[in-house]
Each structure stands twice: as C-alpha cells, then as structure tokens.
Length: 274
Length: 274
Image (cartoon, rainbow over all chains, first blue to last red):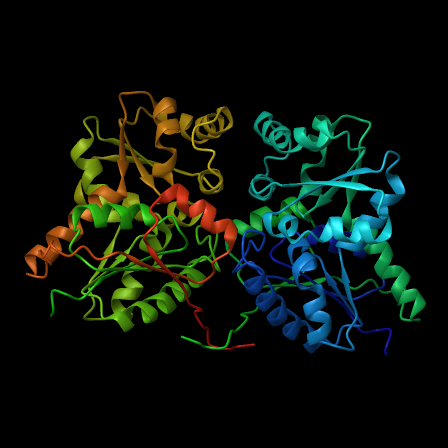
C-alpha cells in the first residue's frame, strides 16, 4: 500500500474535527479526508439500524479516496457500527474511538471506578462496559447518557452557569459512585472540558478520545510501514460535508478556527425505497 | 374530491404531534396520516436546500394517501419550503403554520410589537416579519433564534431552573423591546409554555401555532365542502416515522401520551448521487 494515500475520517457532523485537529498536529505529513454528515446530524439520538446505514454510505464515499486507514470519529458509530463496517468492507482498516479511550482510562484509574458520559446511542450500546470488562473484569464502569451536552457545545455555551448546572445534573450520580476517571465519550465534549473540570474537581482524570485515537492511528501506520514522514510538505485537511448551512459554519469555527481548511459539499444518496 | 380522504401532515420529527393532537380534538371525524422525519431530525439547523429536498421527499410519500389537504407542521419547512412545495405539487392544498400564527398575533397585539422565537432556519428565513409587514406595515417584529429550546423540550426539561435561565437568555432582549405578544415559532415550544410564561410574565400573549393552524384547516375544509362530519366513527391517527429508536419513543410520550396511536416505520429514499 502506498504511504501517500490519505487517512479517511468521519463523524455525524463537525464534532470529529476535534480528532482531525489532533491527527493533523500529530501527523502533519499525512493527507486527511474528512466527511461530516451535517445533513443528518445528530446520530446519537437515532437507532442502531439508521446509524449503521448512514455509516455504510459514508464509508462508500470515503473509499473513493482509497484511504490507508479509516477513523470512525463518531462515538455512536464506533459503539454500534464498527463490526458492521469491518464485515462489510473487509480488507479495510478501521479505527474506532472507543478502545483507545478505554485503554487510556484503564491506565489512569487508581480505584478501578470509571465513569463514561456519551449520547443515548453510545451509552445504550453498552460498548464501553463490555470492552472494559474484557480487559479488566475488576473495573467498575458507571455510565450516563447526556443528550443536552451536544447542543450546548454546538451553541458555544462552553462554560456558563447553565452549562455547569446541566453537567452537574448528569455527572453527580457518577461522582457519588466515587469514580476517579471520566471518559468523555463524544467528540463534542472536549469543548466543555473547562466546565466539566469545575464540576468534577481536580482529582478526577478526564479522558478525551482524540488524544488516544491519534496515538493509535500513528502506531498502526508505523507498524504497517505506512507512516508518511515527509514533513516538508504539510497537506491541508480536506473536509466534506453533506450540508453547509451558514449557521453550521459559525459553529465550526468553535471546533477549529483555522482559515485554510479545504471545505466541500457532497450529497450522499440512499436507495430510493419510496 | 372525496370527504373521506385523509388529512396529511408532516414535521421534521415528533414536534408536529402537538398539531396532530389539536387537529384530532378539533376534527375527530377526520383521518390523519402523519409523517415525522426522525431519521434526519432536526431541520432547524440545516440549510434551505436540504430542508426543501427533505420536504419534497416527504410530500411524495404523503400523496400516496391522496390527502385532501397537507399540513406543514414544521416551522422551518413552512418558512423555507411552502412556495417550493406549492409549485412542485400544483393542485395540492398546503397549509403552513406561519400565516395562522401571524394572524393570531395581529389579533392579540395592542401595542403593535410582536416577538418571534424559532429555530435558526425559521428566524433567518425572515418569513415572519415579511408576512406581518404585508398585512400591517405598522407592526414591529422582533425575532430571536433559540436553538437550545428544542433539545430542552425533547429531553423533558419543561420547567426547570436551567430551562428558565436559557429562556431568559433568549427572550430578555425581546422583552426589552416591550413586545406584548410572542409567537412560539416551533412545534416544540408549547411543551415549554409554563416556563416561558414565568419568564415573560402575565401581560404578554403567547401564540401557539397548533390552535390557529387547526382552526384554519377546519375553515378551508368547510369552505371546500370537504369536512368529514361523520363523528360517529373516530379514526385513530396513523403516524409514520423514518426512524423509531426506543429513545424517541420515550420522548414521544411527552408530546402525546396516548396508547392507541398507529405507529409505522418507513424509509424515505434520495436520488443516489454518491
């Protein structure tokens, strides 16, 4: 396989840009092709069937660029669709955001009590506790779906009184369980990190998937001899979106305020059943 | 046209059930076929192009039932797509939720200062001020997009401290303009009416589109001689959704806690561009 092939990455919307940003910092020589499904965002409140169907359409789009690896930046797709994508696109390498976060959390926890916050789809999949249990059955996992945090992050209410009140409402019951590590199980949540930190205090470790996922992508490319180390040329990430309302453009700058990104619109199709 | 034909009605998700409920109370003899696009909800943060495309697909689905009238229960589609649908489906009668709300507001206002709250798509369309101006150019309209209110309503945070704080954040600037009438320009907002009332005080009239729209549907059917007055049989509304996650089912009961509704899932197709 050619080292010069791009890294493909996708998310339900713009949240995955936290992972793109991290990958771009960590691997500045790599071409990155991103797809954000802004025409159908959010995924986290939808069914497993619909999420899988959308993920398959997006992967069909990304493989046009023949990516050497595909990063599933969406926690809802990572939870519900990774195995499905691997079986549908055998031969392709997928990296999800769940396992890297779990490994990081297991490294950080001292009392073996880990909290996970995420969308309703991610939490109800049970994927986090299942993966933790496989690696270390002594670890207790406490989960909480936090549906209001995505809209709060998208609207830029990063660290207001209201934001902290909503975070407390969700997280207090996890703190009552004496967790010492909290996985931020959604690409939007790093934007709220300051507010989350104030609510949980200084003794709880916060695990942001983008760091761990970036490191895993680098490791896998190294192992396969596919790392593009020609850092002299720094390709600009190419970002495809299924919808580009002005409104979402404003929100995007909250995720990554960089002017030279290449932004394109593309429409994904479905089989016409109706 | 046959009186026995159903009333078609659609929304981006489950919010339009506030209108279905009202229509069913007002016209218990009418068959109602509803479509909620839960696979792609919400619309209010998406572009005009995408919203029109989705509205066209839904209308193509509804006309299979040959409805005698089609109610656009979604304010975002009403604002951006009514004329488009009327030109694409000439001969069909569409009722949107904008004009009925405006007429109600003009009846209620005494100082000719009207506030409008809605999704970013609805507000940025400028449709409310434009329709008000056509009818009475002396009336001042003050608008405010309120993107966090839909998720708050969907999550059942109807009247909490946080809800009132967010509503104040949005509405205080409208109150500073001394509005005496406020249009709730989104099908979700009636669920927050109690909290909105506490923020605006007792002197501001709240205009809920479902009432005015129901009345307009009744008038038009009467005028056309299409009212189905055989009240002996009370058909149960049939509700189609493009996705049926358990999560959304729980939310639905917040809109209409009625056990005998007929609920079906249907997938809408798109032309496969990709």
